Amino acid sequence: MEGLRTKVHKADLCVIGGGFGGMLTAISAARHGAKVVLMHDRPMLGGNASSEIRMWVCGAGSRVRNLQETGIMEEIALENMKRNPSRNWSIWDTILYEKVRFEKNIVLLLNCACNSADSENGHIKSVSGFQLTTYTNHTVYADIFADCSGDSILAPLVGAEYRVGREAQKEYNEEFGLPEADNHTMGMSVLIQARETDHKVEFEAPAWAYKFETDDDMKNKPHECLVKPNTNFYWIELGGMQDSIHDTEEIRDELLKVALGVWDHMKNHGDHGADNWELEWLGFLPGKRESRRYIGDYVLTQNDVENGGKNFEDTVAYGGWQIDNHLPGGFFMESGANQGGHLQKRRLSEPYAIPLRCLYSKNIDNLMFAGRNISASHIAFASSRVMGTIGVMGQACGTAAAVAIKYGLKPREAAQTKISEIQNILMEDDCFLPGFTRKNYPLTERAKLSCDYGDCSSLRSGLDRRIWGNDNGYFGKIDKAVTYTFSEKTRVNGFRIIADSDLDREQIDGNPDLMYIPMPLFRARAYNNTSFGFPKCMLKKFRIEAETEKGVWKTVYSTDSNYQRMIRRELENIEAYAVRLIPEATYGSDDLINTYGSAVAHIFSFDLY
Image (cartoon, rainbow, N blue to C red; front, side, top):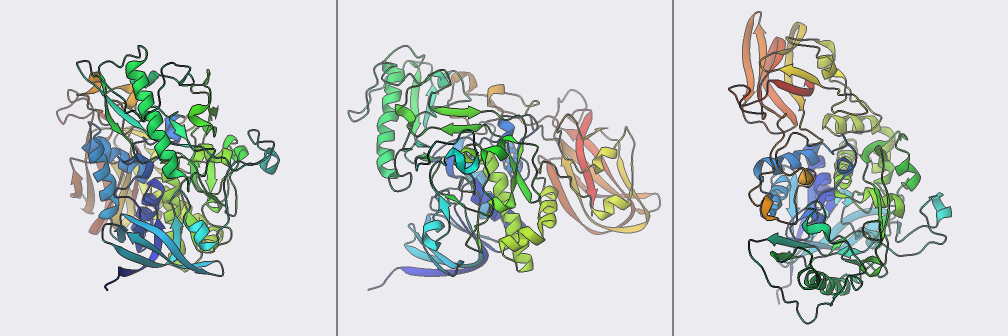
């Protein structure tokens, strides 16, 4: 009898899990030369942000001005704004898919659930997974493994140290800690997508749904999601008092009963403005908030999260979302004035640093992680668990892994000996690290910088965003050059530009309530034909010219369709006495100049290498 096939892969890095943590770990490592296999147990990428669950991406920028996540996170956000203005979930799925599937150096294994591992003496040799669609077992041998599965599947398989539940206050001296530790977690949710029509729509709940005839039956949960498009039924949440891994199927069944009962309540029990609304989609895959958390060389705590001025020598990422602690009782807890009743919240006023020591295992020498399973206390995790923060941690994890692989190091060794290189690569890739300034390329440093308009010295500041009251950018006029001049004819291999992509989303047409939400759940008729726009300040058209002979300028690069914040391009066979950038148009109002751009281009950096 023919058995199941087994396919063997050899890679530098194996990533388990294709949510934002795993995606960005894989992409960043691959872009820096590592051969990567990404194993994901679902048919599409994105985790909680995929169309299977439909939770929008939140992060530091959703709560604190100037803190929108950049790097690959902003690359994906801009791709979605440009190509998916109506915010269609299927298009969103394809954008996430192509970012991984067509990235050089990545082998993508979808529908493949990791279920075993071979390890010895604190070192992982290989992992294996079963791919349902092909009935094939896949075994991956790699130098480094990154568990971005959320549930930390490798922890029990390889004996990595991990934690489940809430710590006692005395353990880390956390204000929100408990008198005694327990194993309770935040619950999980299934989400509802609804659409407003121009006529009354009836709804009959199935007999097996729960009945919530009064607001008291609903524990007085808020009803605002149909009038506030930047919220949802987040309080349809269960499982915090159960095993958030092994009881998931049972919890899902209960969530479906609650979700349909809630929609029945909205439609049939009281005037909730829902007469013309219809249920368009109901999630069957629960969005999970919390399960296992790995133990690394450092455990992030509430004190770190609230002390935004604290920097670590090995800072590689940052957070800024509020401490958003969902209490284990979930839906069946009585709600009150604090917007749901089962939340413990504290807003943060500034970003906090996340060290690399939180992203690798304390006792498994080649295990890393990025996602809601990083080394953090339950209270710190209440902030770091959101997908914007997970994404920048993923980019940091992948970059650190690539550097470790380059030098033949374990993750801890790379953190101890190559941290400056890891940090500068991250900043060159447009990642913000609080308390750190990007180093300029040597070619940029030694050239003379001049501009035809204004003061462009900030282009070499190493700060590529507005932050802490400073703009840090250059406002240059369209068609006015920014020039680097060399003392002698010099070889130029490429250029890097960081353009303003409106991180605060102030210069985008559409509903302002939706500007921080890449994918809304509720479709009010007022927004049915709304295009959510594109940053008007974005540099759209520009050219790069090189002075190849004295007084002779040659265009070596030009585009009229840029839509990314970071533009980095190689230049072939360019030797020049000077190189200049000439902005030609932005996405601004088309009545300002005939190239339908604004008269001013806002740029944070222009580098040559």
